[in-house]
Image (tube, rainbow, N blue to C red; front, side, top):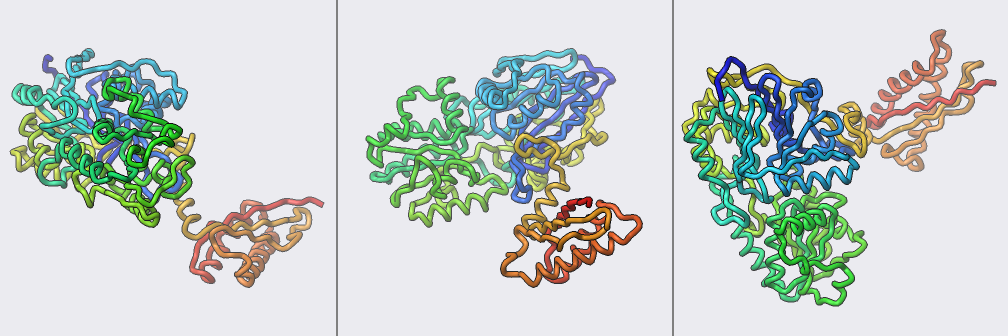
Length: 557
């Protein structure tokens, strides 16, 4: 493409300083391309929140510039936010690989979104806009059809790696190392490379090692039923499990909606050749324990997932047996360790045997590049500039240090936050102005109206409880009709704290009567005064600060 005086802007709306919520934007003049639209699963302090997605204010303000949304692969942290994005921003077309496209379509059907403009790409696809060209490099990851994105602009070539690893004995096709090297020789200005495993030294284990380890577990379980939990989106791992079950004469029962979807998509795309290995619970009644493998969701300790319900004894179709073997074929996502440990403890209390990755490292291998693989990517691509992406700050920083060891100048490496922009022009790459970016919380069907104030209120209620005081007030006489009614939840047991409740009733009565004598009496003023004074009073008595909710019933006589 011809050089000119324009510049290219590159920034993230999610994925920097965090694991998940990936969304990256490349913009040149009046053309804007979005790469990925993922979700992040909430940490324990985000009470009641289902997902965290991006603030897309900038995209909404620049809708006319958007040319396409391009998806690197089908994991939730890269596609989970698409349904929310499509409902808020006009996206003219989505480009996705075949597995990602099937997963996206399932998601849109579930949310009753009638979006039809999803096109399938592969490694031979070239997408041309007026100033920007996009093509693709096949990579290896834990889900089929994963790609790096090559964006050619008038200011130079940008490569976004997507999630990747280098596996010389993969289950699926090899990464296209030759194309990476060729592009590196031609010249790459900026590399956006994932950092999830930057802190892990060496090379990640091959999927072939997992195959052997799973085979050992199955070979030992000659009389046991096996319950195996993994990511539903890890279709290559599911393919491993199916082949291992076939070799050991076991049939498979799947539980969990996402697992069922993954199975259907894998069968549709020919990744599972013989679906007769799958049976339902009625067919399982005729089989012996060692002829059954239960494949389910819940490897991250998700509260409503199949494995959690099995561990809690509330699953309608599966009850644990003392000699069951439970296999966690996944690594904990950062922040999920406590949830996983809670489930593992419950399983141990049931007397079953549990295999985890910490005890048997080879039953899982990461789909993300470790330190030496990140170096390999940089050596192949030979970028002039680097922006580490997809990772917490410590991961981005470690990736930057690895880049220096690979000969990239320290001044040419940019550790950014969501909203920080880079400007790429004919002179090089530099920092630009900040873009609006942040977290948007999804709670059930509500998106964006669950802000920090609501989260703070939920934390208060979870820590110190709620105290409701119901006040019947005669507006004409300006007096309380009856003593305040005090109700609490999560604060104290009323029956065991009668004297404290009596004190609170008296204090509320005094506050209300004093307020009613004021010439500036208003319902709002009374509520505020009750909250203000009662908060101090309760804290002095108990050391707690419950949420105080005054309810005023106005009576006229």
